[in-house]
Length: 206
Ligand code: NI
Image (tube, rainbow, N blue to C red):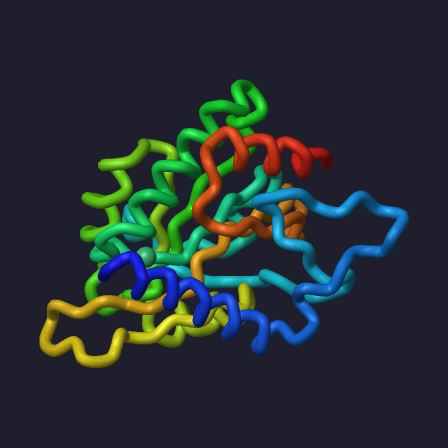
């Protein structure tokens, strides 16, 4: 995709998420400091995340309970993504590296929005290109739809693409979930690794 198309996709994704999430972009109460870039301010009480049952890149069925005790840094994308996803995954890994020892408490996770092509084997090939800590998750169309709904992620096959060589439109936020499995913070894509690392560090308290 061209840069203008990507920008439009980003805007469309933001608009769609805002519609889905309703009052997503509502400021936190005045007595709490406003989140700084790249953190997205989320309306208090807005439910983001929840139970999921998916298959990891080793072919193992996993749920959110398998990650209890560690933070999850979750990104929804797909392995055929030509630009945004690989950049964002690279940023995630670099940000976790920058956290040093604290970074070992954070599991980077890619949940595919393209389960038709992103089989566990395809994910295994892909995630190892980035980092051995990166976990790829896939599942049936219904599994992925349920996980995406829980995280208010919107995705769809791009129009005008034929055959097996298609692109996916998808919202591109990062989600930080706490060791209790609960939502901690949400970040815009496109941050520099040091910006993302700082934003994650602010939310690493138990
Ligand atoms: Ni992408």
